Image: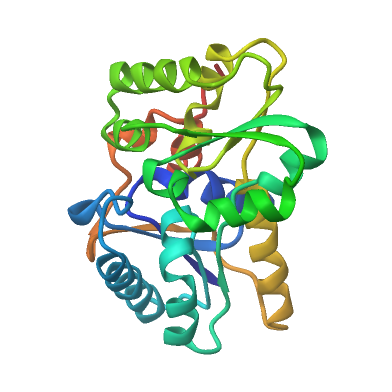
Length: 256
């Protein structure tokens, strides 16, 4: 069983790593698009075109299920992708606003500027967090800095977002799939005890449920293939700076 995961950059790593941990035998193809990253500031039609192109490459390689571990791609292209691929299961990503609202009455949602300004995020807050004090925080350049492996810029973006997060929140939703890669640094910038919520594990488990529903063999050899804007490649050095990237690359994991 080959599963394709689609994102312009490193945002697919957390969900991919959860799939690898939960079902090591699954074969994964990581469909990245560095030539056009990041997708967040792009026009909708560009994002849709890039997502569909990546999906076509994944299916051509034999993918039997597709995952969009990217909020931008899910908001913009999920319906188009499902129509494009027909019966192939497609699993999108939803920011963890619902579980955060079940835990907290005062929380923040850290996301890209595009997601923060989206009607989609506003609807999720209205639907799942009515009556709660929710502060949207646009994390300028954080995802891009993670993709580049620029640790100084990552730290600066986290400090900026933390400074704009109210001191009395007790939870933060990581509303971009890149952010779990630097969750330790984010937690250190927030008041002690602030709980972080992200959707990577939930998306991976939903993907496995959909795969199991296929009623076919879900085995594999555990291979991880990387496609870089359609070219055969390997995970970049910026990915290997993170535990998730090292896990997917089959390297020894140094616990920090």
